[in-house]
Length: 530
Image 1 (tube, rainbow, N blue to C red):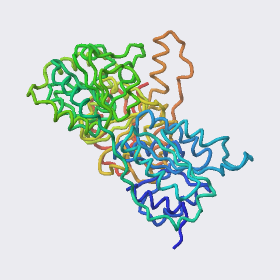
Image 2 (cartoon, rainbow, N blue to C red; image 1 turned 120 degrees about the horizontal axis):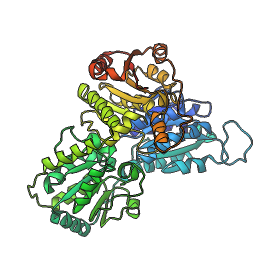
Image 3 (tube, rainbow, N blue to C red; image 1 turned 60 degrees about the horizontal axis):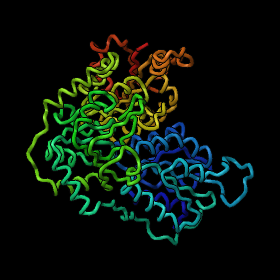
Image 4 (cartoon, rainbow, N blue to C red; image 1 turned 90 degrees about the vertical axis):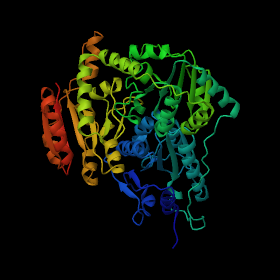
């Protein structure tokens, strides 16, 4: 049977083991959907293309596979651009396939027309291709997935002109997955010198970022081999057990943690940009500058960015750590668990009282449902957890506030996470302001029958911003909001509902979480924190 390019594209997605695609169909992408009806790929329909991108983001963080989106020409791409920028900031693999009006014609005021859609997408995506000839589509897929697997991942755009979607693809070879992705590895002399530096250090320290999420075993082996405590960035916290005696689950922006970094005679930083959202959260302009720094990262471009490293090892974190371990004798020097516990206690003591309370809320969630995937928006509970929280390694922990920092991320990202892990609890932490960015995705939640525990921290506004204004002698304006009646919203979408006062959390919260986890339709838990 004859197939066109749109149908061939679906077969290519199948060849690359894609199980879900997220998108809103339109007349400009109908040909891309022609092959979906007979495909095992599950299509998920959000209520906004931005939601599609966030769903794909959450799915990718949980599976490690790229989230795939189909969007229409013009507003489809511009609507999803915020989600693409979030993925780019946090190095999340995302494939966005967009239609585009025939680029060979001059602007004519057509439906969904953009002045230069490809240029717009190129500013947002980590890489982009326009496929005008069917023969080029397999190569575009191969390059995209090679980027996901062997370079710093991010959002990739493949743009297909409307006239090309229905082009004959019968002459193309059967769709197959390309295995061209091979991450580079530093040369042996460089690895030898790095191993010598690490072996000679008397007081080494490991800083581990989100780029090392798949290298946990190598990180723990290195920590034990050289006796180095571990400081994970926010995106790496869920790599480690909640009570691991080698790990300090606190941001390096806390003075006591920064002092601990300064005292190290060698820092081995793995899979982290060493960016200010972790290392200068208060925007003081003072970043860490270890006395001796070795960096391991898949992105060689980071070698040109501060802080300056004594040595930069470009490559996959697991592979480079393994190569180093083979060169470093095991000194059988254990991490000083007492010292780690002391720094951890000091970091917690340095938190503002409100943050200590909020961390306690997070710890109740973790201890009640230890296998829960916790997905966060930009909200007060998350800000506290970014400062100090050990989520454990049985579920997961990620949020939008450490990268691009958009509001409205949490709910759709949690839907993507639940689709990836249907048998685990998925909890979204979101404020009454953030959820109003994305209320429509409650409809997508019901469509997909993906029960979530939605915890809405309701302080009737943008509480963190209001506090910042007050602390900086700015009269608060624009930060007080009228929230909806969340009980009616839950009822409208067929979701169970419970309301708690903040003062009730110590007595009732754990029981409510257990009830929510048993609710077949999920539960929206409103916490009145105003």
